Amino acid sequence: MKKEILIVVDYQIDFVNGTLANPAAAALETGIAEKVRAYRREGKPVIFTKDTHPEDYLETREGRFLPVPHCIRGSEGWGLYGALAEYEQGVPDSVMIAEKATFGAPGLPAAVRLLCGGEPERIELCGVVTDICVISNAIVLHSEFLNAEIVVDGKLCAAMTPENHERALDVLRGMGYTVL
Image 1 (cartoon, rainbow, N blue to C red):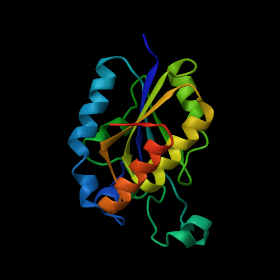
Image 2 (cartoon, rainbow, N blue to C red):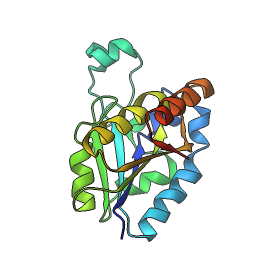
Image 3 (spheres, rainbow, N blue to C red):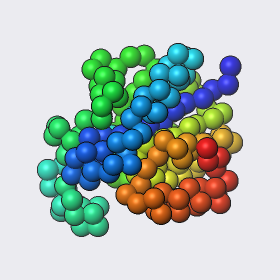
Image 4 (cartoon, rainbow, N blue to C red):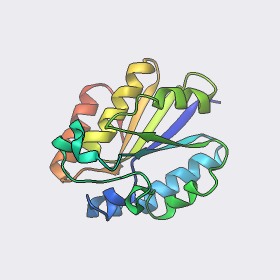
């Protein structure tokens, strides 16, 4: 069996209908939930990344760049959105939640190796924000897994504008990633 894994990037309340609300992100809930269920039915692992910031977020480098407090640890907006919130209640086997303090998650490759039992052959990403967090994590994963196919499901990603979303997908295609 091919070693495959799904990464759901930052599909959290603050990015959907919270402090950084995006109607395009809200429209992804059903599709992302269905994709997660499909991976689980096939016995494939899933990782949810969670953007995670401290109370003093505005004093950080990222906070000065993006001065909107969001995904503050323990806040309502920090939680996974909608149907995906169930995965925070007693995380099942082969599912992991990986907190990250900035755009890309440096610990993500270790989590992928752990859930895949070694090197993955295919890594699929979906989630938000296409032009910041999704693209950053695709690059982090490619940097570690040079022979894995990195797939981004563009239909299940959203940026703050459609133009930024399409530009990010173009950059990913230009870097040799598979964009669905």
